[in-house]
Image (cartoon, rainbow, N blue to C red; front, side, top):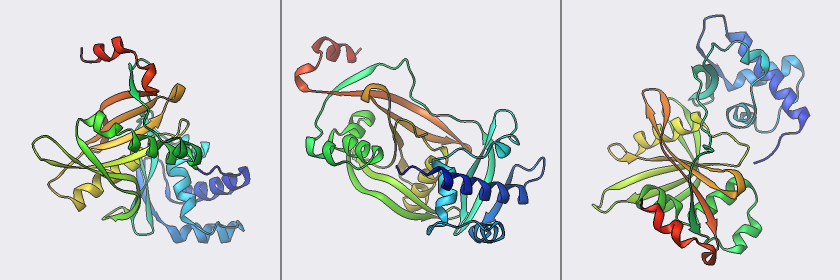
Length: 266
């Protein structure tokens, strides 16, 4: 994932801070703002904008912490998120604090590594590498107990009431009874945080695009020592909850521990 130069980070923080405090008052837990406001504030503050104005909001949704002055307004046990509110509109919303991180006490499940060396050599970033490794090793199948097929990656689409979103990869799954599943996957490198907002958007998109079909939303993240942590996530009310978590260690086939393989069934 692209890193931001410090100067870019600073101007982004100045702009998002200005927008926040122009709308927020004590006791307010959500409010909307338009993308055009970013341009207006930048002009007033004489701040040069990037070619993609939306990158400013994207940065605080997925890459960068909000300014401390905004964090200081959070109620205990809650945090501000920025979600889409429709085309070219966004919503600051105060939600219950949620951190989805790989657990330290999970068993590592050894899986023979089927990743082509050529793919490892030319993967451009952690997210791309992780999606490819999950795909080539059929880890979604193993995790969910389904037969799955990658339909599309980096799918740019829209959700009513939210606006434009991007799904890292979309799978279609099939169980032993012939039931079909829609499986949006988000991928995060070791230092990136699994996005509660992204999970919510993925699930809402499936509900709108494939009404009546079961959505099984997945988050994949690189953990310590190259371990791949997979989470199944769902919405309970307005909150994202973890349904299941498993950790997979890819190893050469000749290094598999036969005793460990037998013990997994227990």
